[in-house]
Length: 593
Image (tube, rainbow, N blue to C red; front, side, top):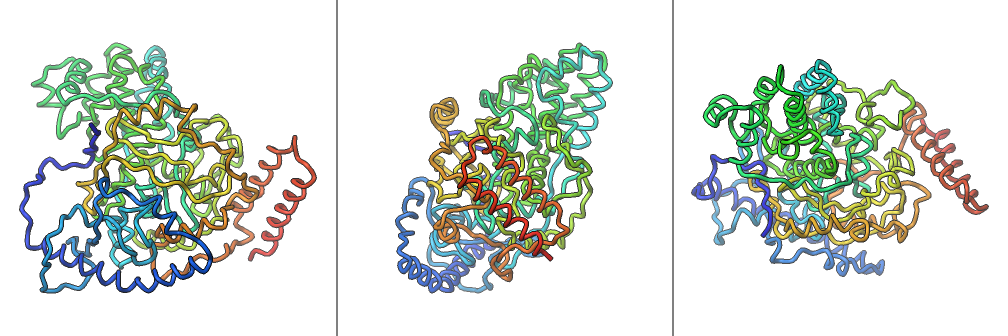
């Protein structure tokens, strides 16, 4: 029995809707588009195969290890794009011809043949044909995503807390999460977020950059938000009637009044939570309501606007302290992973989840996108989200296009691979967990081995992707769903660290943070789609300016932290290597423009 994700489902739509003439034309045009693409890139695939054989590399053998089984994911191909008028159509020229073979829309998102711009097979990212990046390469666009936040309610929560008695405050603090409303960014750079969403591949739970994969790991969540990543999974679930019963008990109201005044479209009005549970209610009731509203306004933000999902009440319905002992970090990460995946579908125009976590992660790893930060030193006990200024940014298509072009030429040397220092992984052992993470019925793969450079090691060709029992990731986001047996997920999570752990000792520590083995980039360019824009040339050596203090301070501090970490057992050979690496940094700085 699998768990089916129903996030984003539209109750007004049914599977029995008849196929329209427009839909039939779109399918036919999809077929013609991919037929043209296969012809255009057949020669490219043959040339690449010839290079592989000449180099003595058996990439087909490696790809066969990764190839999904036919009974897990249906294999077919096709693409749909959205024009400026908002109508969904094929990128191919229209034609009056008709298809002789009936095909299911669910098959159109799976890669089988070479794709324009790279990706010679679908072994690693099989759902790419439903991805917005596929349309962007073909010249179509959807613009800047709407990034949902609840900054207004975070402000109200802070006022509620500060205006409460010390008894109420202590009960709120018992959850261990009371600091979250105070560190959420009031402004989100939607253009920057959109750029990174376009790089996310849900099959691998990672961003596919020009130089390899990166992702948000458990220690990132701990460092940025300071919420627990160890503990039990957040798995509680209930029927609609059971959830309403929980709310009725908390509000002290009847079912009729709840439905008439407080419940709408699957959610409870957030204003009702503050109205019914504030004021003269007992401390425990106020703490429970505060924590419920806090979870839905920080970690699990959805598109319900002024409503809050009752499911966020399940763990704290008896006491705010019920939140203790749960892995809120992995739950928030699973929820963000899922909505990153949904937002990559071609017809999706919005992004949900903890935007502060995503935006802060970008700032930590990519100095070229950081806003100016007043504080030079970092208090190690503070959540790092609170260190980044929240600045209102223009949500323009021009900025989005500029960010895309910048990412297409970004190099590995421009990334701050270990922004928290060499001890971050030691302080957060769960970051080496390898398996599935979960938030209720949302289950996503978590694969740190795909991003070894973020763990201070040389990147190697990763193992095959984790296969859910069923995955449907088409162009249409409403049909997006992933099914994984919950029992299997729970067992894998509970077995850590005895098993389900990435053993770093079998990999080579990196002397230069951006190190990868010789075969990696050749493998990556065959199995990924490294660039979004066909007119952008492949990235060359990084070109810095001397005034780019962020990159030079980051490189020097990273070198210093590594040396200090190994100082106690530094032999003569290692000392020579570290001295050479420092000289390389200094020479590059002097040669910069």
